[in-house]
Image (tube, rainbow, N blue to C red; front, side, top):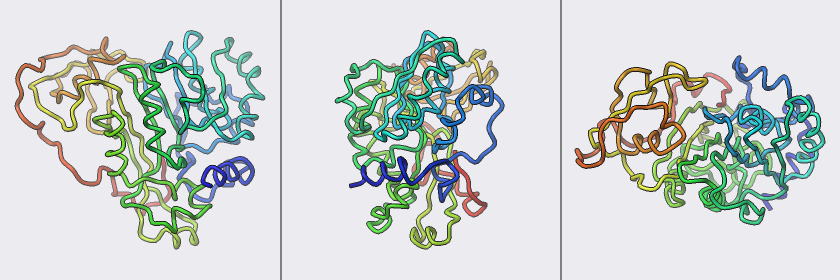
Amino acid sequence: MMHDIVQQYYGQTLQHSGDLKTSACCDISQVPGWLKPLLSRIHPEVLSRYYGCGLVCPPLLEGLRMLDLGCGSGRDVYALAQLVGPKGEVVGVDMTEEQLTVAQRHQSFHEEAFGYANVRFLHGYIERLDELGLEEGSFDVIVSNCVVNLSPDKDAVLRGVHRLLKEGGEFYFSDVYADRRVGQAVRNDPVLYGECLGGALYWNDFLRLAQVQGFADPRLVADRPLAVTDAELARRVGNIRFFSATYRLFKLGGLESACEDYGQAVLYRGGMPGQMHRFALDKHHDIEAGKIFPVCGNTWRMLHDTRFRNYFNFVGDFSRHYGLFTGCGGGLPFDVSGIASGSNCC
């Protein structure tokens, strides 16, 4: 049933981003300068059918193989294709034929604009990635842009993502979360579901789900509160608070369920494209170049056992344990300071 609702909403009800009733699934923030040249080379029809939370784009993508879950009309695929370059590849998956038709219609346009062909699109469901003929452990990075909340089986999505990622790869994605479990009335409302609110997970349930599927230490990269400005929709959601958030989940053996202290540290040498002088692993790890930065064992592995390794010096090992790393705790991870300030999204 939910698949039918989503296909109807994104395939027929919505004709362009202006048809959305909330900011949950669209980027209304100022486009960063580095993104503008990429977008300028993308066909206007592809751009007009964009419903995501901004470009989901971790650093250091050149030459990588990427998968975009719920690629829609292909805007993110064509933007990422320029970042991975001619030696990389971006595969887009979507279940909505109308959206994929737009994406595929303009493949030759983008091949000519970029000077190479490195994208392909597959029709399918993100809960059934094993049916698409994609090789296990074959992707460096998997992204998704405000789509996982639309899936009725999020457990299957994360299981499929884990299977397709290489060891040391990551799932880097934006989505919508709630500060509590969403009730049946909101969950079954077709408009709220299509607007990325009805299917939003309670943030703590998401963390548990990720850990069950092998992502031991989900890292919050950025978040913003969402304001439901449509009066009728606000009445329907009641007191639930929604957040647009970006997480990164690393596929790494040996990650622990808590941040443990082994007396380790890293030194960022600088020079990474887009993060020349400081590297932001997540919301709580903004690492200045040239300065020793104490880290827990999980953070050490996320830098040492991934594509980021060559940009760091590493101090220490796992031979001695000092307990829980200082500053690790629980509670709502999102910033609520702007909850009433207006529409925002990541």
